[in-house]
Image (cartoon, rainbow, N blue to C red; front, side, top):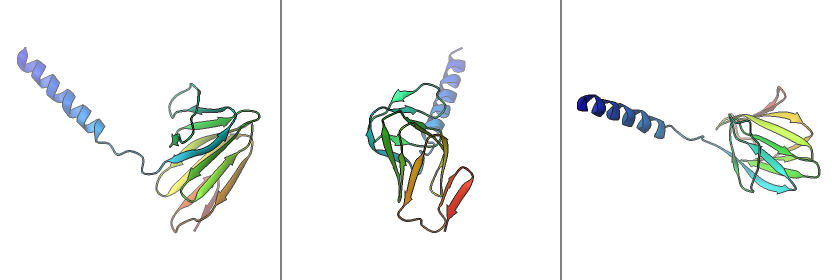
Amino acid sequence: MFRFLCLLAGIAMLVFCGLASTDPPSRVARLGYMTGVVGFSPGGENDWLQVTLNRPLTTGDRLGAEAGSLAEIEIGGATIRMNAGTGIAMLNLDDRIIQLQLTQGALIVRVRRLEPGKLIASWGLACAT
């Protein structure tokens, strides 16, 4: 019985060590500005929370600016401004691509620089160098 428990403990340690060593996302977005009520739903969750300034955002996260609110997301050389009543989902965000889904409202996207091999995509349209 003792051997069996030791074996289970060893397997559990290997599994948890493997989970801990997975790489974090290589690039994240940052909520750089907000006014009013801006909601946040982490990837894989259905609940909405009030977001705080400088919150990192990554693939799967959703952000929504309620009526009378504004939000600005910074991702490398790009700035995404969300008007009141706007919702977005971060479909894909890594070293090469920024892919957003506009669920409602309007966005203003400003790209100061787009390095070779990088891609910004939204609504099936893409800009690349």
